[in-house]
Every structure is written in C-alpha cells, then in structure tokens.
Length: 291
Image (cartoon, rainbow, N blue to C red; front, side, top):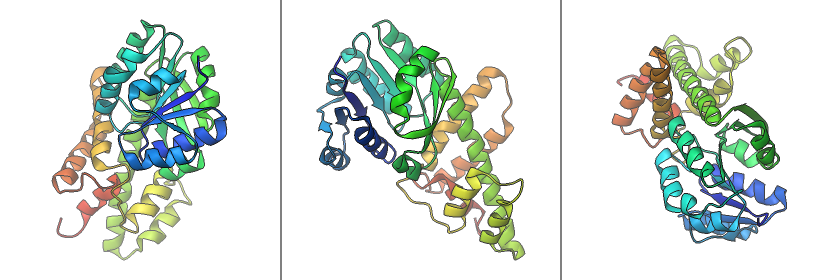
C-alpha cells in the first residue's frame, strides 16, 4: 500500500473536490484527466500527474472517480481500473451511475479482493469548492468507516444509505425529486410573470413558507429568475441521463412514476429545441411566450 490517493476526472465538480482532498488530507495525490488545463492546475497545487487511469490505480491505495456519465465510468473501469486493481484497494465512484452496473463493478472487484464503493455527490459547484457537498454512500459499515474520513474533506453531510448500490438509488431519487421541483418552479414563475407578480418577489415569498426548498433558493433564484443557464453546469442531457435511471428503478419496482415520465417529455422537448448543453433549469424557457 502506498498511502496515496488517486483521483480520476477533473471536471466542474471533480477539480474542486480533488483540490480539497489534496489540501486537507496531507497525502500524496495522483491525478488524471484527458483535459490538459485542469490537470495542470491541480499539479500546480501539488498533485502528481498520472499518464492514464491504470497509472492512477497502480500508484494509489484508494482511487476516487468523478466522471460525467456511466459510459465514462465503464470506459475507465474496463480500460484501466479492472486490469490494474489489486487486493485491498478501494475505488470510490462519486458520479451518478446505473445501479445494476454499479453492483456488477463491485462484484468484479470483489473477485480480485478489492472494493467498489458508490458515493454519488449532491449540491452545487460552489459546494464542491467550499467542501460542503452531500454524499450518499453504498457500502457496509466497515467499508464506510474506511472512506468516510477522506470524503469529509469535501463533504459536510455523508450518509451511509445501505449496501452496494444504495448510494446510487438514493442519489437518483434525489435528482428525480429535484427535476420535478424545478419544473414546478418554472411553471410558477411563468404564471407569475403573466399575472403581474414579479418572479423574484414570488420566490422570495415562497421561501418563507411551505414551498421553500433547496431547489427554490438555488435553481429558482439563481437560474430561473435571472434567466441564466450556463453551459458548464449540470446540463439537460445529464439530467435526462439521471432521470432515465430513476424511471428504470420505477419499472423494476413496479411503480408508475407519472411525474417523472412527464419530466422526461419536457427534457426531450428542451433537448430537441437545442438546449441539451445548457444548465437543466433552462426548461423554464419552454414556457416563454411563443414556445
């Protein structure tokens, strides 16, 4: 064992998470990303650049992944993690991935004496920078105790949700509720505008009552009200991916998720309208006059 931390994926969330681990853990950190710029910034902060996924896994005893989708995780798993992993090593997936795939990865690593732990993150890019994320972990109690101290370098809320896959299930359902709430906010703002009530006043007032929520104070006030939907944020395409996972869970458990199915239709309309790369509360624009 090397006592080094590995980190793969330095995107919008991954880079600040990696930086918090580097600064707070006091341990050597090996980092890898296909993009040159974020890797260079992390190296400037004191990390060591790796040449590949396999190099990260080979040089660390615990490796964190923060990749944008299941297909990226699958590529990293097959192309570097599985061939290089060794007995006693831990791989922690911070992204949101399909539950069945998560459990299959855990099974394959277990055959080699290693651990795959699902620990998807929640909250905003600012929370990633501040080290105040919420993390939902799928693991045994013993496994959780091995990774919790490191996770707390970038998260203030760390919840053991159950065995392998339970972290993913919890995060997927978290996102499903978020998407439906954001759509309700978009509709409320659209009606307010057309009825002579100022949207900012509406949401500020709702925040003082039973309609208050994280989504209202963040996605509503910071995106829908100013009509700002940046490209380097959680896009409609990524939201659709997570919603698909939720609908699949509904199918598997026999739950008719009518609200989630409606949001899928709305996301499809936004993507077809050219808004797939924009921050997902952009669905509010579908309610603008003429749309």
